[in-house]
Length: 473
Image 1 (cartoon, rainbow, N blue to C red):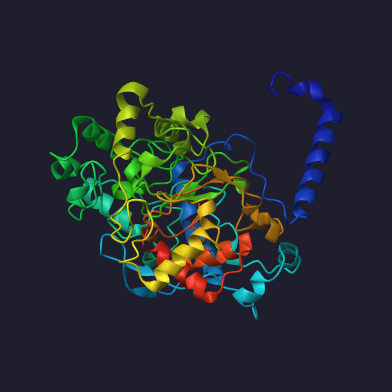
Image 2: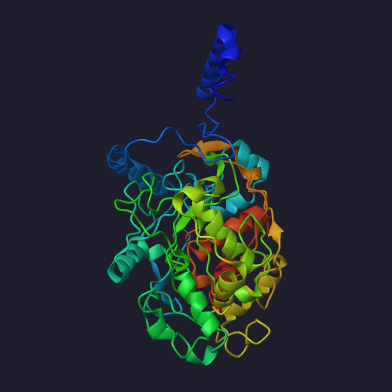
């Protein structure tokens, strides 16, 4: 309503509006299942406040914000450092974590829980909390959150800060991917890791990759490593960084073309309280993927690359993008080069797999062979993850909401999630945490989750074998 039309309301109209707002406020207060009001389609903004005051307020609130998230994680998971003996990530610098970390309600076992129907689990509120969607650290503000090791290395190399004054990363380092991860190229597989054990940045990429990449790929890499404005990292006074920021680069999240477990929120769900936390996915094997984005189902890596910087960088709100200096990459001269470079990132070597993507019987253990049998049979895993790339390029709705009642947790409305794209399982041991929002910390957690959600009734031996098989992918 414009200012010019406001007087038409008159006293009766204003009184009615006030009563309506009061009723809405009382209803919202009396309905604990509803999310806090967070506007509608567009990002909610009030009259801008002084930056120094906002920063001081956010900094004062930050300890309580982080303690609330730590409490939630401790209630849901066993966060201990328990590496699997002799099982390393592909770079050889970090052990794979083992064991089920999701905590069960008191007195339950996984076998007893799996024997119950979804209605019974829902009615008795027995669905494990660690199987519910994982809220963003600061759900109602959202935005990109980077792990401390990424922040430290980027600041060291580029003197550019990825640290926010209002929120920090929440998971322990031992539960996220190795850093920096190795870089494997589909164009030069015989070279192995071409990163020389370093994090590729705008400062060093040319010296490391000169003579390995083509000119087009090198330009794509430059663009992927160039920081551009993002909602929380930019020059404006509603940023979440102490000093004005150049922004965020694609590979700030997708370190070395892989992932460092940085997260933000899906740009395609509203209202704000209903948005999903999105864990950064690996770019390895992008050349074989036909849909992109967990919900958007974009049909090319070019579409995805352009959408990210034009819209997703700004929490899905293009209306705010111009204010913050949005980068508008040219489709013909920039986007295609970024896409070509992304399509070069390959999966890690798989010495136990044949060219058809299944185990070589002469190299696999008995447990791994049993796991493969379960994967393609009783476990129904291959329905969505067929060999050799272990994805089907489709969207699937697991209807997990069958098991729980809608509620609000740490300001996130936990609701039905709808179809999510299938992610590849190649190199999966290198990519914890799992699921689109990182709610599952280990491969053992994923096996328990799907055993329950799919109702396949795996035995303890079959579960262990399935994990052993997936570690070979």
